[in-house]
Image (tube, rainbow, N blue to C red):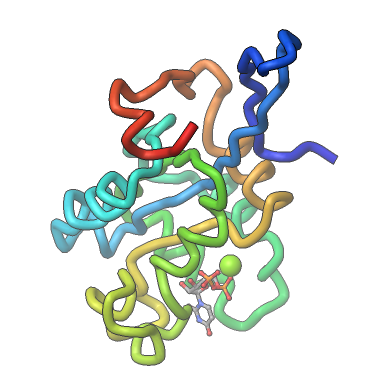
Length: 171
Ligand code: UDP
Ligand code: MG
C-alpha cells in the first residue's frame, strides 16, 4: 500500500536520523468554485489554517481523468452528470501537507450536502446544492495517495519548509 507521505528527516537527541512522515491530501476547487471567483477565498482558508501548499495548478480535466477520479461512484445515477460537471471548465487542483491534513480538510470542507454542512465550513458558507458543492477533498490516506498520483506528476510537487515553520508546529 502506498500512503501519501513524504519522508523527511530530523536529527534526534540520540544522534540518529529519524524519518518523519508528512501527510498530504488532494484538494480541488471544482468548476463552480472557479466560475464563482471563490479560488482565493478557498485557498486562503487552507493557507490561514497553517497547512503547507505543495502542489497547485489549474486545468480542465479530461473525461478520462474525471472518470478515474470518481471511479468509486461509476455505478451511481449521478455519475454521468458529475463527470459532465467536473469536465465543464477549469478546476484548481492542489496538494496540501501537514499532520492530520486529510481529516482536517474534510472538516473544513463540510458535509457533501451543502445545506447540511455546518456554517463555518466551506460548503456551509459558500454552497447550497449537492451538485454544485465547490470543492473536493480526499477522504482517506489511500484515496489521497491515489488522487495525488492521478492529478500530479512527482516533479510538480514542492518539498519546502515555510520560513515560519516553528510558529506553526512546536518542536
Ligand atoms: N454528488 C452528486 N449527487 C449526489 C451525490 C454526490 O452530485 O447525490 C457529487 C457531489 O459533487 C459530491 C461528489 O458527487 O461532492 C462525490 O460524492 P461523495 O459522496 O464522494 O461526496 P464528497 O466526498 O465530495 O463529500
Ligand atoms: Mg468522496
